[in-house]
Length: 424
Image (cartoon, rainbow, N blue to C red):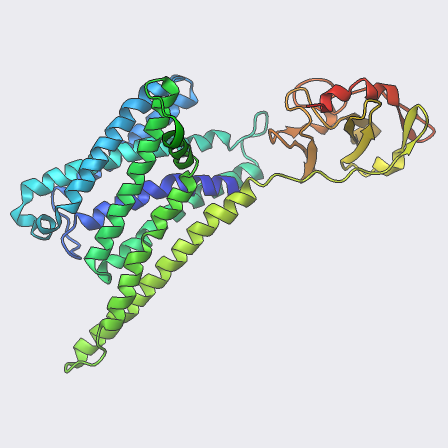
């Protein structure tokens, strides 16, 4: 659930904030009335979402298996259109304020903003949408508690991104417009940086661009800093939040007219409330994309090895020691000095599963127990406990053993012959 939440939040947040920013920047003052040209921007939003759904569906069905032919032209278009949009928005404050006198220019502004929205959404949402294909594990029933938790995490991530954008949008009524304009332009600049970095990576991988030295290190740093850039996109709205607080405290509470005094008091309360919610939103998103991501992708720690009796040529493990149905891990030092691990578990029906703490696919990563399931640490696949002791797939590599006098007996020569699995 947490993985789906943080992934959806990070993927949807940028487009949600950009949609909100255009809504504020291209609306005159605090007016609730939309200019007719705003519907052009809405059209771009809708087309971007539909195109993202189609593209994600084609990728899921493997209709498109070479994304470079789509990524390269759309990234070029994103960079060009968003840079044009940024330049127009910076120069358009007077035209937006007097929208009725600049209807043609407003139409151009909204058309460019709509194209910017559509392209940005098309680039950002397919990876989020493709999470839907991971809700059900292969071979598992359609409706399970795990599937519902993943769906809930995905939905909460999307809704949280939209809610954060709505909280920031509420600042438009109390924060100076210049503060909101600066933050929105910085947001657009950060999105452009992400898109330029992605384009450089695609060109580098395709051989159309060769970067060396500082330029390559900068591209690699920015490419790996996607989460930090998303946090920065949220953090820049601290500026209008501070502007809202300042405007609220500058509003005089005393006025000759009692009604006017009430209006001033209401403005101050609204300004402080909006800033407080915005600060909480910034802290919440930052926490989710740092601590939350760390917890979601935290590498599990393997349980410590247990003791056993070792004779000259064999190992003896009492059946009572592993009879609780849980995973038990053991360590063995091979004749060549290699430290090896093997596991044992009691299966249903009284049988025992014994094998190396490694598999042919994932090597010596090992297994751990989670919610009664045995999970491969490297690929996170749940192993059918009934198949432990059998060769194939991500199952632990089996080896020969016997049971005698209430013990599992393993010949040391058997383990010595498998030491290469834990080398390198």
